[in-house]
Image 1 (cartoon, rainbow over the protein chains, first blue to last red):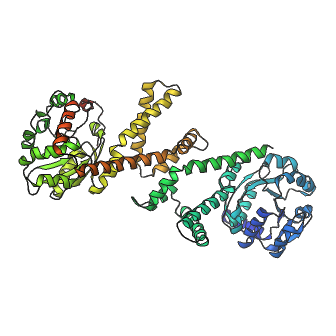
Image 2: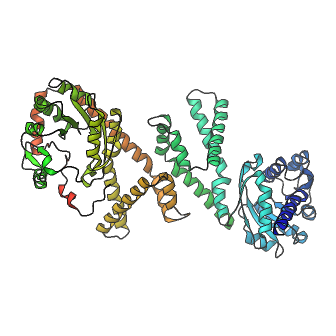
Image 3: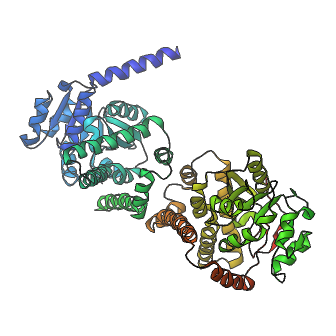
Length: 285
Length: 297
């Protein structure tokens, strides 16, 4: 009997995902990335997605994918169960006041706004609302994102599982304590930019040594992709993977010495720290 | 280490006043001022003189070298082929082994590598390995790696002493008495090294195991990284290795007249540490062997 209930629960969860109406308040880059990820993974049909934005500028791309669009935020709340709040942070409090009357106990509200705490979200929404906070990163667009989320007091295991289920289509999705969210920003939200910088520098190095830029950039990208893939698939410590590439007296160890001379490790740690601190500062504003 | 009875060891030196000499005597080692006597009464001959003196020693004892002798040179930068060349005028097939060791052999935690010469058999290498393994780690390598070994484990103890001095300073700065700071610092490095040797984990992983999120250790490590700690160590090993090669190169060139070298160096030798034909060629007290806690093999 227990097994049947489990199976029924799973079937219900699967059906929920299909029947689920997913709304986006705010239709900018991040929202678009998540939606695109969901669509590409086939988790949610385009017709089940409704996005709202003040102007048509952002909404055209959504319509082209088959999603429904509106200029009315309230409509998203009336139509959808799972609602992503993807406005710019400073606009959010105003939007919350606006939609508050339409928020009910069946809603699952997921905020993407950097620096807006669960406490503030819960204060501006009806008591007991199921609120969660999500910090994605840009590669969600290509289903290789890194996302963390934290649950508010009204959200339970069911909501957390649903969200994780839905978002795994966009990449890695882990639940964390709220205090890790700013760290995730420094590591992975902003971290994507560090990787682009590194890729550019790799390519520049190759250009200096005589390779054309376009080819160099493509190879740089593939190098990063391949190295990351090995880390993910083997689960080995990066130090071990690094060692495996370093033949005694060979090219790699010579190059690594240059990186150590430049204190690359410390610089990267500084970057993560700076971004994390900035996220924390911004949250206080 | 109990590998060899003291009376089976013979040591010779021109200068008999040095503390190392009386130390050896007290251990029961046979002592003589004649290098020739040492050679005659030995099967395995460790040449532990300073590198520039090696050619003169070889000239002196060459005639007494017999086929049974295994000549082991510990002299930095002195190649097997240069020793074989010198000895070949006296003995057609001299057995030569070159080794690079380090000072902690004194506490039987040495790091030794050896390379075998043209006429040394596998058993000869194994015999030397057995002897040196009694005072620490010992393994065979190709001769062309010996300079790198010098840079790493030959000079390595000096890097460690420097680190320990600084760690102790850190402890003192934060309020620890000096003696305690030194003791704790040394034990921390000893323990860490032991963990690494006994673990299959990568040192990076072992480091991670110590670093709790947002904790004290990761904060400290950030400072080390900012200071380029890793690259400093890489630089040090590289510099020592390169300098070893330079010195060897200079020695090979033989541009100064041998007679002039001989006079200058032998005078210098009389003033400095002795040339003993036994493996401990340093000024450190030999009585460290007598410490009760012998943590070896």
